[in-house]
Length: 180
Image (cartoon, rainbow, N blue to C red; front, side):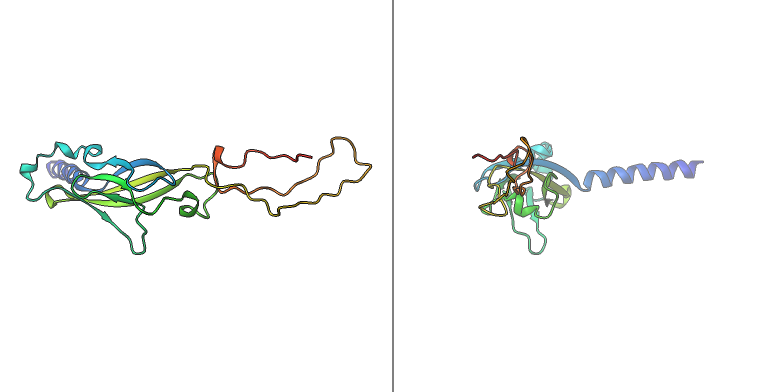
């Protein structure tokens, strides 16, 4: 029984250490098409890292983006402060999440390494990209000819080709109608 309880205590302590130094997650929301240098968040404050005294660290705290090959940086992080800003490349929800179902939420994810080694952690940051009305609806043709027989009943219905709008929700096509 003592060996079992000792193993249990060791497992709990190990889990605490892994949890403390392991990966964390943080979520932010950002509207697409924002200009460069718009403040999105502050990792130092949002992760409560400002509570760690600088005296106990061997070098100053740093925040480094972890890039994957081919990534186009849509955000940037001030290495010394942990502040997150929009980058020079504008965020385009329709381009970023092309091919995803129209009404699905769109996320952009990055990882940030928090240094030095004494407080090392890898933070996964998920940005929910909010849609703005930046696309006009597109019809398959600019002119649509419909033949309506003379003897058609009043209030007859005729199918029209659907308009396509890559924007979602209230920014997408709500309705349209024929006028004259």
